[in-house]
Image (tube, rainbow, N blue to C red; front, side):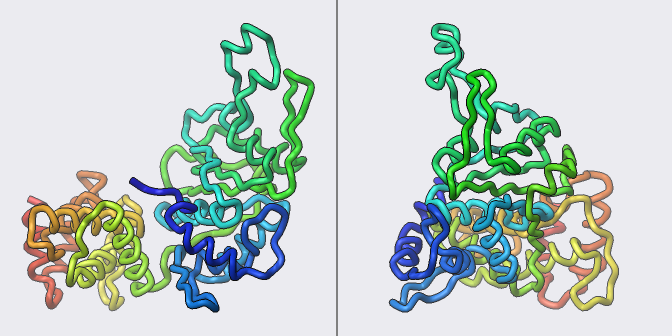
Amino acid sequence: MRPHAEDAFADELKALAAADDRPRPARWRLSPWAVATYLQGGTLPDGTVITPKYVGPRRIVEVAVTTLATDRALLLLGVPGTAKTWVSEHLAAAVSGDSTLLVQGTAGTPEEAVRYGWNYAHLLAHGPSRDALVPSPLMRAMSEGMTARVEELTRIPADVQDSLITILSEKTLPIPELGEEVQAVRGFNLIATANDRDRGVNELSSALRRRFNTVVLPLPATPDAEVDIVSRRVDQIGRSLDLPAAPEGLSEIRRVVTVFRELRDGVTTDGRTKLKSPSGTLSTAEAISVVTNGLALAAHFGDGVLRPGDVAAGILGAVVRDPAADRVVWQEYLETVVRERDGWKDFYRACREVSV
């Protein structure tokens, strides 16, 4: 349903590799310049158009790519929905040609997921040996000089987090059961993502945080930038799901983005009305989800045109996370802002209908 970045954008990566005549770090598929171009988009000398994967300040991308070219690990930090996972995947795809060396952080992630595990049938039958060892994605990346990824690092228990310290500082992974160690091959590095807004966050120790160069991914700076991001991703997701393109959908995308930004910022776009903010993050990723769901509703149960009624229920679900407090915030916003806004009558009625 969702190809890995290196498969979905294989033609762009191939074109970049062919046009790229700049120095490449050890085992990198592309030069740092080409990796940054892959993420930010551009046009190659042969006319090939590289689509933007991340819409944001170019300096942020350049710092992230430069970090990976050194021996420092990269930590992408930001509130939920700022494309941390998306950027992480595309960086790994452009640098190593493989974005699948991934550890997904959860409250139950064991140390074996970061270091290594054992094939217990083989272990019991023959004792500890390399054949009985099951390498983690990080161990494989170290052995092959690849880029590994750790998603939601702050969700991993603190003692498991700290198992990364030796890997990042010494570039070795001890295997005391065998009296051996795995030494990282040149080209190895690690990209981790983290946020400090969700529940269940485990703060990083100062020792571990020092091993990372931290790059903060901000929310889109302007409404136009956020509309552009949502439009691009909805188009990509819609094509992957075989949904027909929704004509005249841009106005509804802009409306969803406006609602999210105003409630997120606690003030209307014109700065005249202060608003209460709900408990949710109302991120760009959630806006993409709302519009994609609306597009599916329009395609399967409507006339194919994205209308206010197609996005109203999705917005309500994104805003009202706390049934008591958030519902009050939403009702006040509907009556004081949406109801009085020119051209928003249909949207107001659709929201009132699903809010009852």
